Length: 90
Length: 500
Image (cartoon, rainbow over all chains, first blue to last red; front, side, top):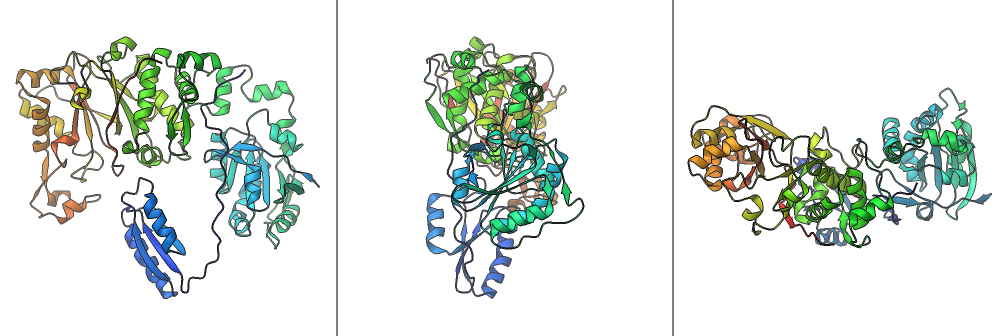
């Protein structure tokens, strides 16, 4: 029996991962706060440890955790940082 | 050595995944498994700790289940196998192409698409060799007994009659479950004829948008398939289409609602003449069972989110508990029995238009009040029912509370000549507490910053209260649907377009 699928079965290309293994010393690390509660506390601790290992840090935040990041924010992070750390949940 | 057959199979996390794309990133290790095979469970559990080191070596480990997606997801979760999991539907053409005889079978494919190695069953030493070859470095596979264990016959090996039995036999309703085309309840199989009838001449390829979270493309054909699955009559389709259009408005933030741990449902409110044309129940039991139109329209939207959008419970839908309204929830307003302007008129539509309004909401809570005799008293009782919504000390809510007001409660307000706005303002004003009583557990920054004796309201303003008329003439029970917080989910309306 033939049926009409409710699923989108289009094939999607897998996005390759960015190269790994960037050295922290001298790298610029963007710390992205998605604005979930206490995410800033988590990122404060990560920031201190990254700086202790010679990284330069920048802080960014999403406007609201439940919506995708604005393209401009993604562009800014991609242009300014070598690595990104995102605090995901509360 | 031979060429590994290409394939594209649905991933447990949504969307098809093709071998060509996998191997573009490096060598691929395919582990063919099935739920009912104990050796497969053992293999997945023992390979689970190797997922990260193998990935770090640039190798993609993939489980290919001869099972429906929801089964594959459950097994992957319970075994802790955190790599890509694909679900192969019957009659298991990919397994046949790989000439599998038994499960588990582990196959190493290099980036040029050549099969370099394969191991059958659980074979710790053999798998260690295969993985080391894939990774170009030593990989340690546990030698915990049993180090060798044969598996089970691959489903693709079964004869057609046995396979048909395993996949539901001749019962097409069981076939729907086996394919995962369900919300857990039986569905109407979406044959091409039924879907064509549902679309009523509309262009099946027309795209309404991409449905979060997996961004499945909502063609009218797929929406029609969901409407058939849900049990809709073709006459309901214009309402379903309007509901999907509303849900896809970015202001509704369906993406956030679909994946949240909250019990977030998408309530469909229908106003206008189409309520009567379709037999939508606005009266007795308006929020309950009994009316096909109410139950199937709400369900069709949820199936679009769940199947086309990929928000499968336990996978991309991460709801901690969920709620029955996530099966589908559609309410039609009792405009004729209401002293107030209906919701769609409040929202700027002409009364004679048929309109669908979507509201992100929690499950309904009943409010009994058979004693209040004046409107202030009743407004206070209705308002205080919201005190504990979201969390008892989370004041103000900063999001929509939807009240469904029953006829007897409406009559009391109508007798006093109160407008909707007066009711809202009285409810808003009635529900306030000193900040000091709200400083326990989950509370708002607003409460923490306030003077301890400052009165805090449950809502930011009276406009966060939405009133809707529905329900049977006897019984003083109204209902409250709490909000979904953190979603910034606007209420969104779309006019119903009835012509094809």
